Length: 304
Image 1 (tube, helix red, strand yellow):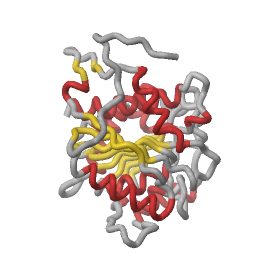
Image 2 (cartoon, one colour):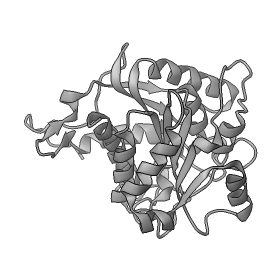
Image 3 (cartoon, one colour):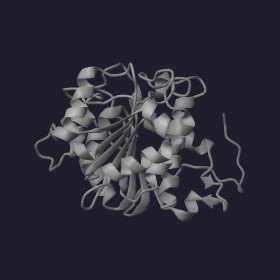
């Protein structure tokens, strides 16, 4: 359905191609080939871009602020084939180039395997995940990026990378009945700060965000990567996430977490993961939520 046109109500999206500098830059990283469950996540970056014009780019304030007036936002297109050795190396190199020229790189996934090369590309020293799952499995898949970042096991020996100290990793939203005791023990043994879904709801979002930023953003010259796994949400708002379950975060909670974390200047990159645009509800609610999270990240950048 064609969207209406109103010159007094500009729409989000349709940002210019990245040139040489920006405040924020989007990059599609459509990983999917190593997913543990069948997925069409490689179709999601294009779907998010298509969904963005359904929304405006204005924060209500007061006063009202148009993100396009206060931020230089650009789109760097997609990594053509991000899976595999060469794809990871290309992603790391491209994210590194973009992070040197922008305050915030927003990677549109793709399954959760994109977190590994994007975090390495942005030279992250700390990691915050919003996820129902630990992603500490062995091997190379969408269930392994956090373990790979701790162990720093790139598949391409030609890539100069450095891993992340597990003491600088915070995992928000880890859920009951979505993980194993073995991986919970692995997280504890490594010193990863795990804030379960129940703890988030007991403490409140502001308190959790403050702790997460303190832990992940500690140290000298901190650079934090934020992984937003949309399957942390309740399945009613994220049916396009294969692993989402009833009882997860509400849409507003994911949006609020995204904006609050991105408002800290130590956050230099973020990714949106695990949305399968080909398996979404007819109203595309999951993709639309991912598009709104892009806008929340930009809003956080704007209020720094």
